[in-house]
Image 1 (cartoon, rainbow, N blue to C red):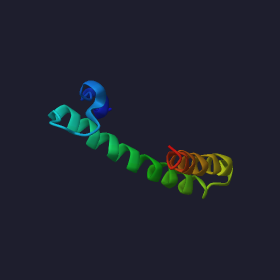
Image 2: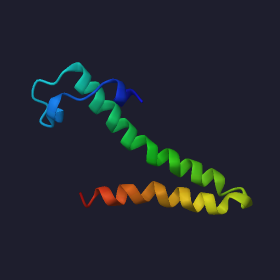
Image 3: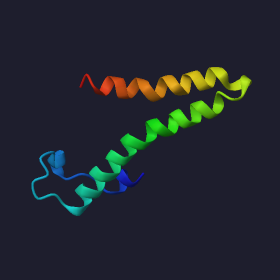
Length: 75
């Protein structure tokens, strides 16, 4: 949510040459989101595994937590 409030600079300034404060906040919160969300999904999946009626949802959660991170290594 914070990433949408603080937009990146024109062209996204990937080299971080003279970035604005908005660009720095955008990059930092984007990185934190990218790092925290998969672990949160893993935690949800492992918690759901304890309930028999949520086993399929647990498997889906675990798959979805690892799938995007494995794709990121290709790009």
